[in-house]
Image 1 (spheres, rainbow, N blue to C red):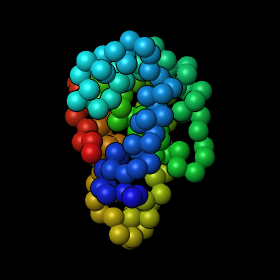
Image 2 (image 1 turned 120 degrees about the vertical axis):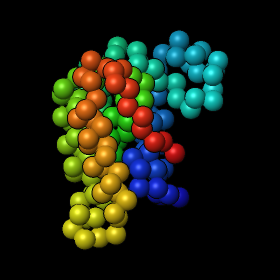
Image 3 (image 1 turned 45 degrees about the vertical axis):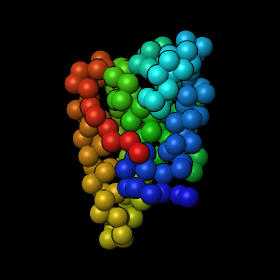
Length: 144
């Protein structure tokens, strides 16, 4: 299936990363909340992120395998969507991952992908403007 949109969440890889992060960061309480409002599409809450900064640093931000730049961007989308705290080192890693996005880099070199350039540059600006203390202002991130 691959990618169906140039958005950060517009492909199978990002959705797989989201599912993996839910497994890493969820708690029994978040599953109960998810069951109560399953239309939301995510069991991750601000507390899922706020209570697990060390785990996020160890298991997500430290990734350097193929595709890890997409995983880290997904982390940024999910944090902003939840209104969680985004420490400066998270912001730096998320922006770095966006700037290293292969599709974005190839598009900037003249490849096909004007939509990806817009998506990544808009995402970078959203991360930069996101309040490090979380939640204010709440950034709306388009998710497929």
